[in-house]
Image (tube, rainbow, N blue to C red; front, side, top):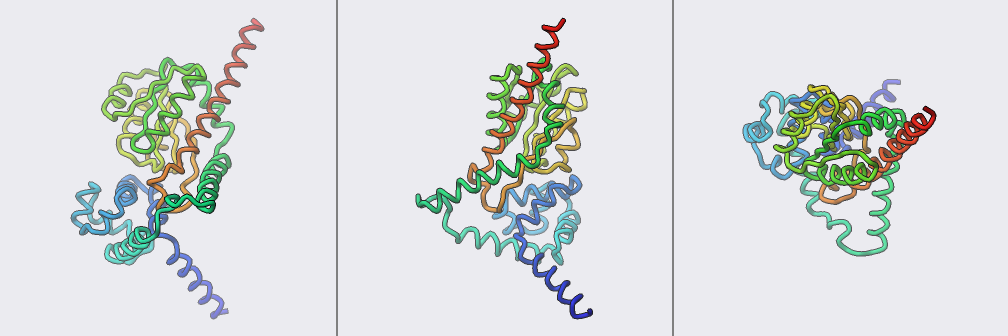
Length: 283
């Protein structure tokens, strides 16, 4: 029995060791704000983080050194140095691998199709029809629907904008954080806001939705992390599947998830519009 217990413990440690560092860091996006802010910085700047001292990382991520050390311990590392060594090894390995998709082979094309399919199918499993239905009515009825996302999420926000406009929603898309925040400040309870952030921790995106939510406008968060800071300032959350592996952030594998969610919202909105039309005809 003792040997079995020891074997189980070693097996658990081995699995922990083989979990990619960036995937571990991504799980921290669901942690409290300060820890999530450090995790987001590392995910967006892994090469910089490897070269930075504890003080430099603290300044760059706008977080305390104690917070960074706590994050390292929460992720299963002995301390900051242990974490940096593991991250450096992983970043070095990713840099040494040939860029996927550069060589136009049957295998590379099939792998791309597989990654896109998995991201959409996994998102479908996470989407709850009742959440779509509850979001459809306020979006359709809103005076304005303001949509914002930064970086890669900005592309997803623009896709959503164009699809909702075709569905009869009075949507507006903001690519600039300053303009998005100004729009949020002038919103009323008759408006709605949609914020898209894969991490759910992008400061500008969280602030945009927080302002809209505080005013009383219907606020919809689209994120991979349903316990994130963004989700906490929303009325409803549509969850996207996380990227299946680290190192895909430079590719556009993630965008088809947004196309699927845009179509799903459009279907829910169309159903509500039909129901409203039937009710009106009945009167």
